[in-house]
Image 1: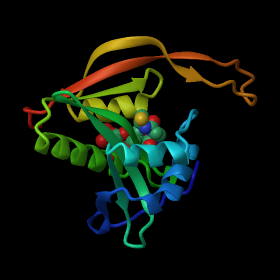
Image 2: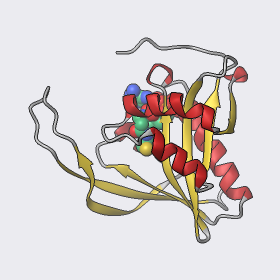
Image 3: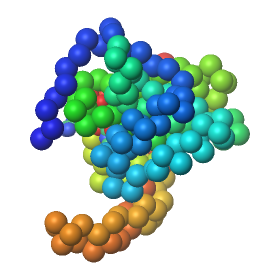
Length: 169
Ligand SMILES: CC(C)(COP(=O)(O)OP(=O)(O)OC[C@H]1O[C@@H](n2cnc3c(N)ncnc32)[C@H](O)[C@@H]1OP(=O)(O)O)[C@@H](O)C(=O)NCCC(=O)NCCS
């Protein structure tokens, strides 16, 4: 279990991600995802003009980030991640609230996302934030082999979830 860093939520701020954040973002990504995006993928996301946000403390340390893109009339969440020593303290919810606010401001009708079927923590967060399951993509995500658990590589289903942005919780 990683040590839990506690902080005053009032001192945290959310900003547009910049190139200088990518080293920290990619390091968090590598710790939190079994198939992580590379630093290059984050640089590409910035170049594509996707909506990339970071949540920082007063020392300019990245504690979490989220990336979404506009898809027609809707917004699509691509990733939402919190640093391992900072989870369970409401930062995921804070980032999601920001995403909903930004997407609404851009005039999007819905926010869509995909999540691994096994990711119960993320699914719990999304349901709390008003997302409903709208579909499933079979064998969507790769699951790498795990030498510790002696498991083979495979595939995992994705749940597709959606939140209508006209609704206010
Ligand atoms: C999913 C994730 C973003 C949630 O961020 P977070 O800052 O921990 O979330 P919050 O603190 O806002 O908590 C949201 C809910 O999840 C619960 N939760 C968070 N961590 C938990 C844990 N380790 N075990 C059980 N529940 C947990 C919280 O208790 C809260 O529910 P509650 O209000 O009923 O108590 C974070 O765990 C993460 O980065 N996971 C790895 C990356 C990932 O899976 N991203 C999502 C898919 S792209």
